[in-house]
Length: 397
Image 1 (cartoon, rainbow, N blue to C red):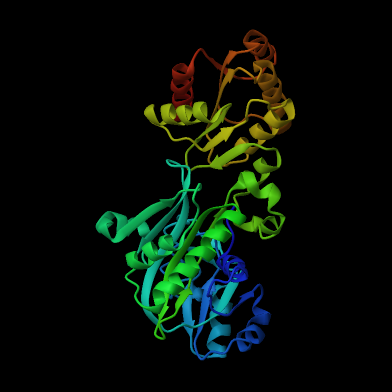
Image 2: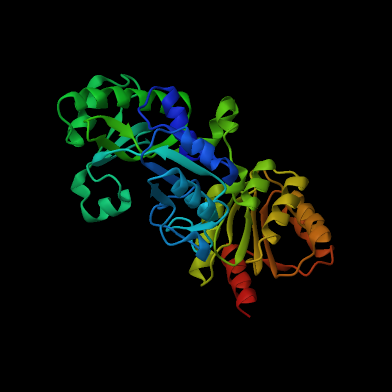
């Protein structure tokens, strides 16, 4: 789960991280009053969407102007004008894709005098099962760009959970960032704060880009992007309260209500599979035969008829889906349950696109019998390769 920048900064501030004063704006009418609560004389007006590249982004609407989703204002009047231009408009960045995201919130922040821009992040390194620090002197840029052009400017290391975090980890970050004097002490303190917040709040990613050094020589968190481990949210009620459902794909949101692992993609063939590995293989073979998957969908090993029905409804709600491939290898999951769910869903929402079903495993003959006697226009497949060939052919016709 992701949260907005203003929420991330408020959370880090609770732990003692140095952040600028700021105010979230949810409607244009309150912009002037909230702007006057900040000292000025420089304000930063930031669009709040769950995507990076806001500063370089562009709004679809002409009246929003061409200045991007992060703007500087030198008066309260200019703040209000920018809020009116940005709020409710669609911001397109390199991370949103051409559809963009609608700006439903603005963050007004007190301006900062910037001497240097740095990069600092904490991630879960799945290779070592440890928390990893990533630091670079090239702040304010996409870290992928830095990694491609100047990888030597990125320093990364992990923290051994057995010994825990020590001051020398903070000093290692400081030296990697080229900090000296009192800034090293500040960095050691900040690293402790970030690590504590990361662990206690079950984060999976904490990115500060940029971490700045002000003209006065102080470190400050100028931007913050935070993601949390969905599997740990049950014990993070305060974090759950920060969830902005308007930022999530409606289909993914609906799937989460039924404990379905669903991710929307850009292709034309909808997939319903049991097991993450088999789902990945299914997507790969669809691409191998010249088409693109419309989603990743793992119904899990213990899915019920109701869950399968909802999964099918979610797939068919995507207007980009031109065909559906059901690929079930029944171990824990019984093939007859899948068959009953498919029939129930088709009866409820109809079937307007080709449907290929491959069933194998527990109760497979019963599952095939249920589908064959249902009267549905279903294309049967003997194996995964056969299923992929048939659905791609049906879609391409």
